Image (cartoon, rainbow, N blue to C red; front, side, top):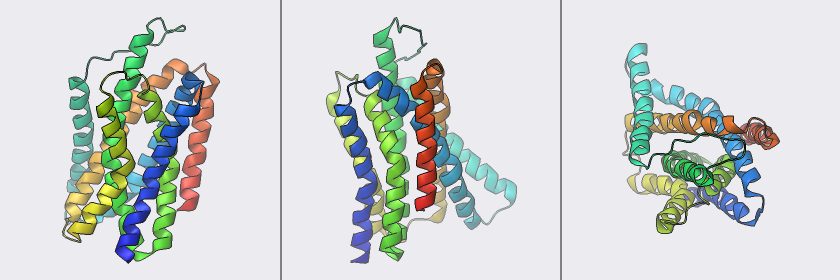
Length: 259
């Protein structure tokens, strides 16, 4: 029953994405919400990298029976691979060059840019949450209460990310089926990771797990620095940008406290 319970609590993390999707539906001032969610997601994702993924990578790299420089090459190599994967994915998506103007003269171009962010952000978060689901599952098999708190902490930063993804993809008029598939995968991605371990057991190599975490970290960095940061630079005069950043810091603090 312990393994099944650990599997079930991974659903909690995905439910917070769903809350974010639903919230977007009921908010009328979508532009303000998008700006708020983008700046909030930037802070949360950078916090995820430096306070969650990086320490985990350092801890996991201890399994490598190599010298310091070989370990560093292994870690940075797979992080770069994560960045490269999204960059290649970026190239194959329609061109999305975007410049902000005070009155948004090209509204369609701006919407297209947000859709682009939504798609690549969703793709990277699916991989990240598959790995995070594995962590929740492992903790949950040791202690259900600790696994529950971990899933709750993960959910805290999934909520603003869910708002950002849903806000970015609101402009999609075509390809609705693909959008629904991606959003469904995002909601259940943590459980997918847990199911992987549930059926595979302890047969997955720690080297492979470390490589996957590094790839996910690279993807999150790419999204944060080359997409979200670029997006909010056009909104530095809007107060929603700074409100979002403050909320992002609060989310990170809550996530740390719950852990």
